[in-house]
Each structure stands twice: as structure tokens, then as C-alpha cells.
Length: 541
Image (cartoon, rainbow, N blue to C red; front, side, top):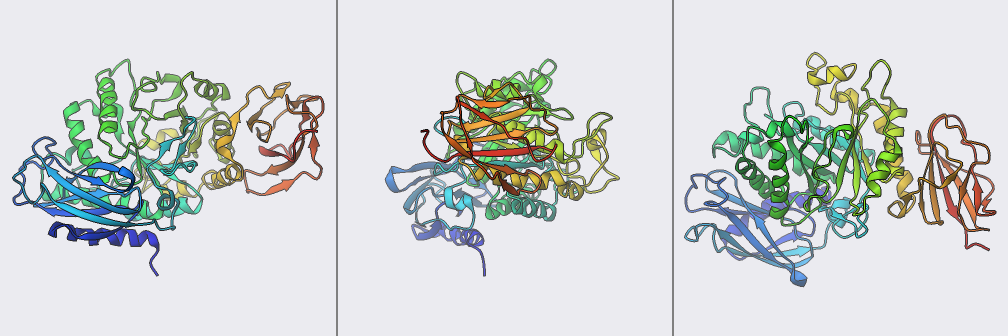
């Protein structure tokens, strides 16, 4: 029996009938519908955004309206991919820069959109992520809080991450509760190939078409399975040879081809790398960010991936198009909670995410990134204000297929393949992180850096006095009489230990009661890291 996700994909084939006229065609809310049109002639340069501008205006229930760009897909074939945001009847009309091109201009049609399938959260709630009203986290399209647990596959899609490998990665991480992956590969898809994304909007030839149709398979698989892609191209300094016009040409096509999918845009890895040496790429990339935002019909949240925090000057943080801040703590070191608190306490808040910290398997003479280091990095970020965490692993992040060809990974520690990186224990243990937070109303919790007296290596997050979550760093030393302060007198709390290694919980037998506005802290079960969940049992006496 086919899942509802694959039913969504099957609908794509049905959409090709639309070129015959204003037929009523089936679609599903939050699923990609694909419409195919046939031009009367082959367009000389179908990537030209002015002379070959193709789009459709979709009008739906409650006054909803979207102008969606279309794209060339070989010969005289042009397509528009649209994801309906509401059930009901949608009408569309196409537009082309040359009004006499009747196959592309002035075409009409109707979509009869049924409610979404229930196979994945993306189909249930909508995968165009938005910023929550309080500017502290992201939500699905319908406002449901979105918990960010990401993995890093920078080399995808490319010959280093073939489609069959990509599918294994998607399936493995979904089974562990991951919700996002970060990628910026878009390099040639075979060892012998010479065409990557930067070259694939120059000429309308068979090689170009094959490239994009292969990339389709990656994003279609992730969409069907329910994983959000956070997408960019290359690294910031690699944009130097290209003009802003070149980059807009690429992104115009990319948005048309993949904008209907549940994807986010990070533009590039390390957009502000070496700002003292390569100033030419920074203004260009900031302008590109605004262009992407202006072109996106769904106005999803977007960001830019930064250089390491110690060198990140935050040039994009106040840009109007940047909806949430990406943070890179860096590698083989632990970030201090105060660095995250500083971002949290900005006068004009934006959600922020720890997007690159301590890839598992990285090692040096004095710092080994093992599972314990991964847990500490992840829980420190979340307890200090990040709305999620992106993991990374040696071998996996760079798509190492063969230890004999490690690429740049060899300078970070012992070489691993992608499969060995995928199997590291820290990556698996992060599934418990999501379970822990989603057992609470995690989006209501806020960091409380001054909640303890005297101070200790325990990170506190709380929903007022109703729910508190405490992360005990491994080998924590708790000062005598350490307590949570300023809680309502007489309020009782149930206490539960959560093991971040296994996900098991152990209830503390007796409730704790606030006295003189103080709640004493229990000692953790052992010297490893632990989480303590405190829930108020009633109103204060």
C-alpha cells in the first residue's frame, strides 16, 4: 500500500494534463503540485529572467494569492510547481514576458485542493517555516511550533553524496527524530561530471537539464519523507568570481524549481568568511539575501550561515530579510552560555539556532569530540536560548565515500566515511534531546541565567514558575545550599531525572516544596550530565 506521501508525488504526473485547458485537477494542501505547459517554440535563453519570465498567479480561498515563478524543463516544456496553502478551489492564470507566446501566456486552470494527508508533520502543518510571534522560534506554516534537530550534509547533492546514499541518510535521521538537514553541495553529481549549480543556468542543453532533473530526486525524496532542507551554495568566498546578476540568475531558477518544496535558504556556508580579505563578496551576498526574500512567493523564514563566532561580525543580523540568526560556535571547544545569552538578549530579538558546533569525531591533542561533547554542546545551546541544534559528524558532513579520499576532513581528526559518521553514538543520542523538550511546552521555556544561588554549572530554562528544565553539566560541582530562587512560597514540584544518553526517566519519589522562595537542588544520579524536569503540582498556598 502506498503512503500518502507517495500519493502526493503521484499527483505530480496528473498535473501535466493542465496544458490542455482549464480542467479541474486534483491536488492536496501542503503537497507539491506540478503543472506542465508547452511553448510554441524553443526559447533561446530560458534562464533569462527578463526575456523569458514565466509565472502563474494562483488565487484561492479567503483571498489567498500567490505569484509563483515557472521554469524551463527541456525543449519546449515549462513547468510551475505550486503548493496550495488551503483546501478548496484555486484558479490560476499564467504569464510570460512575450504575450504572443500562447502556450505559456494566458493559460488558465483550476485546482481542486483536498485537505492534507497525515503521513508527515510537513504535510499536516505545512513546511514553509515562519517566525513565531514572539520572535524566539520557528513554526510550521499553520503556527505549530517547529523543533529544529538538524544534521549537516554539506556535500549534498554531489558525487560525494549519491542519491542512494542520500536516501539512507534521510531514512536514518528521520528514524531518530531529526527534522532538518543543511546542505550546500550542488557540485557535479558524478565523478566525471563537470557541471554544478553555478554552471547549470548558462546553457539550455541536455547536460544542464539532466543535472537539474537529478537534483529533483533529492529534494522530492526529502519532501515525501518529511525532512526540511536548509539550502545554500558553496562557501562565501567561492562567490567572488560571480556577479550579482549571475547569482540572481541562478537563484531565480532555483526558487522556481524548488520553492514549492519545504526548504529554507541559508544562501551559502560562511557568507562572511575572511571579511578583512574578501570584502567583494559580502555586499553582494547581502544584496542576494534581499533578492531571495523578494522573489519567494511563500515568504518563508530565511537566514545566512556565518563564519565561526570568534570571527563572525554579524553583518547580516540586522538585515530585514534575515528572519533568524544562525550561530557557529566552532569546533574542538565548548561555547560559553553567555555567548548565547548575548544573542537572546538583543533589544530587537530574532530566533537563533546553533548551526555548527563540534562535529562528532573531530579530535586534536587536547579535545576529542565524542558523544559527551555533543550532548554538552547541544544542551548548552538549547538551555541558553537556541530554538534547536544542528549536529555534524566527521566523514558525514563532507560526504566521504572512501577513507583513501578524505578531502579536507583529514585535518580535523581520524578519517571516517559517511557511513561511519552516521553511526556515531552522539548523533543517535540527540533523538532523546527532542523527546525531552517535546515532553514539555518547550517553546514557552526561556533561559534563566540568574536562577541559581549560588551559581553552579547548571543551566536553567523555565516557563515562569510552572515548569523548569535544568541541565547538569557532567562532573558538576554543586555548592552547598545551592537552590533555585524567587519561586512562589509553598508551591510543590514533581521532579523527574531525564537521562540524555538513553532517554529513560526516573521520578524523584517525593515532591519538593518551595520555602522562603527557595527550592533546594537534588544531586544528580552520577557524575555524568543529566536533565532535571520540575513541574508545579498546584497553586502556591
